[in-house]
Structures are given as C-alpha cells and as structure tokens.
Length: 201
Image 1 (cartoon, helix red, strand yellow):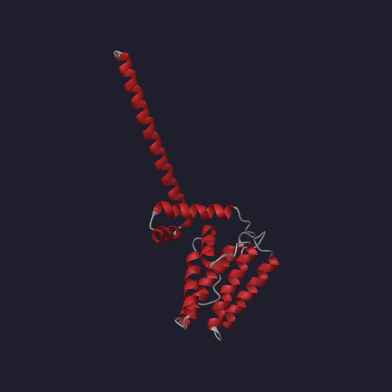
Image 2 (tube, one colour):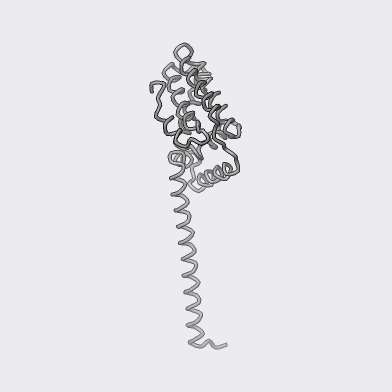
C-alpha cells in the first residue's frame, strides 16, 4: 500500500495531537499534585513536615495525611455543652493548682483530662499515635504539644523527668486542652481560651 502525502501529513498531525494531549494530561496531573501538596502543607503545617520526615517519602506521607482527613470526615466530633465546658475548666484549674504539691500527679491528671475531653468531643480513643493522628487534622499546630507532653510523661514513668520537665508537660497539655475546649454556640470562645495562661510558661 502506497501512502499519499496527505495521509502521511494526517498521521503526523494525529501523532502530534496525541503527544500534545499526553503532555497536557501529564502537566495537569503534576499541577493537581502540586496543589494537593500545597493544600496539605497549609492544613497540616508542622505536622506535614513531621510526617514527611518520619515516613521518608513525600507521596506516602501525603497519602497518610489524606487518609487521616478521610477518617475524620467520617467521625462526629461535637462541641461541648456549656455545663461540660465549665466542668472541664474547673478540673483543669484543679490540676494546675495541685502542680506545686504534686507535679507528677498533675501530669498524670492532665493526660487523663485531655483524654476525657477528647472522648467527650467524640474522638475515637485508640492508642496514643492514633489519637495524635486524629487530633492533627483539626488541630495541627498543637499536636506537637500533645506528643511532647506524652514523651515527658513516659520519661517520668522511668524516673527521668525533672520538675521543670513536668511543668513543661502541663503547659503542653494545656495548649491542646484549650484548643479542644470548644463550646456549642460560642465559636469565639476558643480564641479567648488560647489567650489565658494560668500556668507560667
């Protein structure tokens, strides 16, 4: 079969169009990936960097962060009623008051209080790493505080934490506690709570 010049030009044109289409698709996919990366970096902040460093692969870390988002989308996290919020605030004040006489006990109480507050809000209460991962979706700027407080509490269990370390643990727990203390019908309350500094930092 003899190919005419017109047929040859048509095949070349089709080939060029196919290459151009593939290039556009590759470009669009790369752009979507960059936009997704930027969105995750913005949403998770320091937690994004931590995930990339811990996992060692950006794509896998981003997949993990997206999985966290999907998991949280399926949960019913609720704000506190005013009475529950008041009860939790009173309990936190008591924890801080007892710190001078019993720093170790205060750290344990602070950990339990944060745990109870998470449960009351509707977070699933799995192991610590799962709780931290869940918290990171809506509270990425304080999840590092939660991890730092937990690390100090574990060191204290081994008898390796100083009183200053324990004070820092309570301050770290407080940062997360104040973020989680969201009251139904009072969206501005969290901003007010964040400004209060009951324990010297």
